[in-house]
Image 1 (spheres, one colour):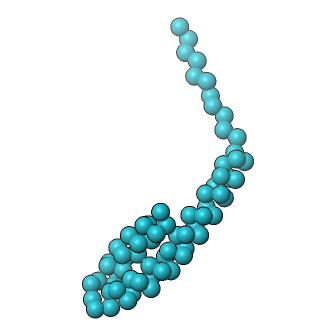
Image 2 (cartoon, rainbow, N blue to C red):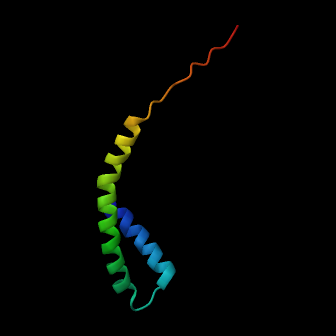
Image 3 (cartoon, rainbow, N blue to C red):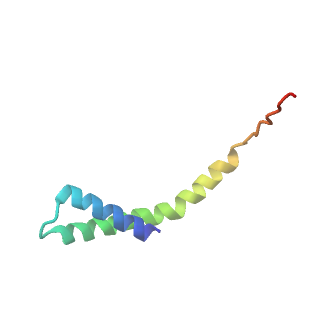
Length: 68
């Protein structure tokens, strides 16, 4: 997932910011490598953090009673 998302987003952002020139692949490969590292660690650590955060929240379900 991190590979695919970083690949797609970096491609789009380099296309928008630099356009398609002779340096496109050089810019994109450098930026994709950095984006992949961020996405990989984010995909590994964020779900654990969010799960811990969600475990601290008490969800209360209200019962909707209708009178006849």
